[in-house]
Length: 485
Ligand code: UD1
Ligand code: CA
Image (cartoon, rainbow, N blue to C red; front, side, top):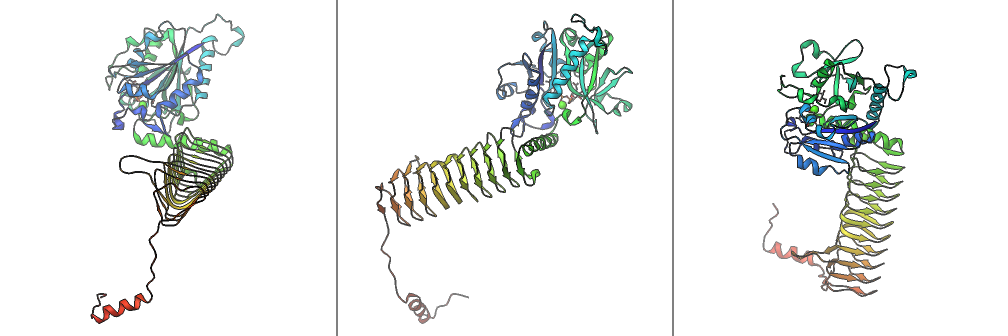
């Protein structure tokens, strides 16, 4: 049986109080709707149809997908109307429609797959009598499945009203429910599997005579029932899968659930977390075995961490590739950069905008590296800025060295060749090249290229004045001056 998925994402998300469409609010670095699509893809649908409306262009641009189609619902008249506007896409489709809410990101692909299997079985067999099954048999009374769950707090969800045989008679929304109905704790997930030929022609019969004046998708159940076509409830054991995100507090709650789930996955794959609650790991991050991560660290965007690497507390690593056996010491911030195997970075290091740190190199405390290549086993251990530089291997960069790469208009390049020795507090005024094994003397402002093995020294002669302190004291005392009080 073929399937098509429909994801409803046209709503304003008023309760988010946001300029951004609700479904684009992020969970672990990905828009909420990304997770819904990811789950839907488990059933291998022929296509995924997104119903967009409010700032629909933005939503369309955020979803990157080959077999996706975007249908615009100009006015958001309700979930029933949202599915109705897609009818042309499936009016001749002999298969299942999986309908999902764009604001319910926790549902698992496996759950959807099971539900489709269940629907297939229901459509083909009458009851459980598998022996009488023939390929041509079709259960005329089966119209689809709604995924439900028993939730601790059903507030805000559609309550599922069933008959004695477990068929759903109707789903009643919070605002339309009687006090009795409000007590029902089995709620609709907003996820349905409809047999498309039975849904055809039903949606335009929906009415909006309800508390919200909307065309509810849930009302098709009643209409179908009148024709003796039934929707069956399939209960999901873990209610958390159906949690809807209607405001930012629910967003935070759901994000936390997903984060914990992913971290458990990494932990079971050989990653050690110290105080996992305080650690933040986004969806696109990849972590190898025997990585150890300490508290308050954030791994964001497209980041990968090689095996044996240790990341100390309070680090932020974004869109970066970290090799094996690297040590990132506390309070370092690393963005859009690469660190090769065995390097040591931090504490308090800052790497950004394509800082590439070679094998076994050391980038120490209060060192900033921007758009630079640092060669193998090169050391810059303290208080340095390296920007727009190409640094060779086994170079030593003394404390306080600065590549002066910007003249207020343009950026210039610094080249430091292998095994050069840059004395402490050298100012390298770019563009400049320091040759192989060349040296610069501490405190020099170097404005010319230094040939290999040469020394660049720029220094005013040092004067020593003997007994200076005593002479000075005498001078002031004789003036009777003492301003120290
Ligand atoms: C909906 C269900 C409710 C279910 C709950 C599960 C209805 C009437 N109610 O309620 O039974 O328990 O989800 O989370 O279906 N949307 C559109 N166009 C519209 C209206 C909504 O695309 O005209 C989209 C929204 O963007 C959202 C989804 O449909 O992604 C659900 O709409 P929402 O208003 O959040 O419905 P709920 O009140 O949560
Ligand atoms: Ca909702």
